[in-house]
Length: 346
Image 1 (cartoon, rainbow, N blue to C red):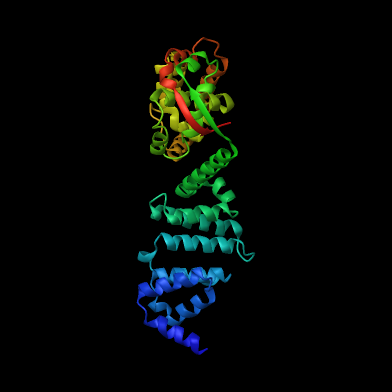
Image 2: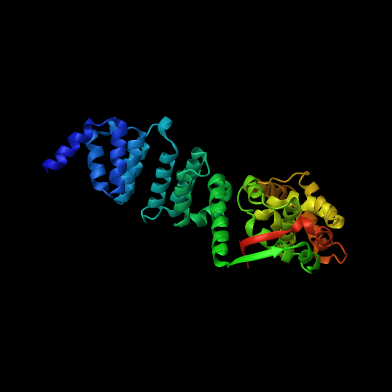
């Protein structure tokens, strides 16, 4: 008992920053009960927003989420930072699992708070955003988020990006490392463009920002990048139409696809694709979240006309029996498609 009293007295003498550091260390040591005792000994009126958030965390760790919520409500509006919103979101999630509370109501509150936390965190690499994504990933919140994505746009954007990257990383780990060398002579003899593009397909990242896409393609020629875009276009359109191409991460390469069609002399495909782009106003967002918003607007405003336009463009690709192919350009310009190196192949 004397030791505990001594610790309380010591704690009360610390500055706010020292108190916060001590509490963080106690959290790391899984000492939630001691944290509650120490912070309550100081008195609510002497706790700033950060210490109140740590007290709420300790209550949540002790399965006392109702107390955690009361503590968080004490934080002044001006002190409600990204951590506060995350803690509140976490608390609402814990309450959603309590049979005394309505799951849907508390889940939506949790997602609202997590969305605010991601907005205040600003930087995509911020640790708080990772916390928010992890909470959604490991809980039933993900189903609610997927069903109401438009209400929590930032959280949905970061979560969806995480899911995309995780899937691709798993696929990459499952693929063996391969060595490949494509010379001018090799390229002139290929019968399928996949032989040329496979390393580029495996190494270029289309699942993050446009800047990261360009960065991942820096070691390849512009022609290789255009070819990759065209290959992605045909994969997606032949599988689920132009809507799928734009809806998925592949929409990031729409501009390279059009430029590739023009450069490779595939003008029938370029003209068909350009009709779709014109329907979007001549410019389509490269950011996936923004692109999805545009799709929703066009679907809502134009309904059947929008889908009829897409279907017509789809049918052109499905029914095309002309002689335009990317392979003609590749074989006439083999020096643009050289490759030697290792990659995770199929």
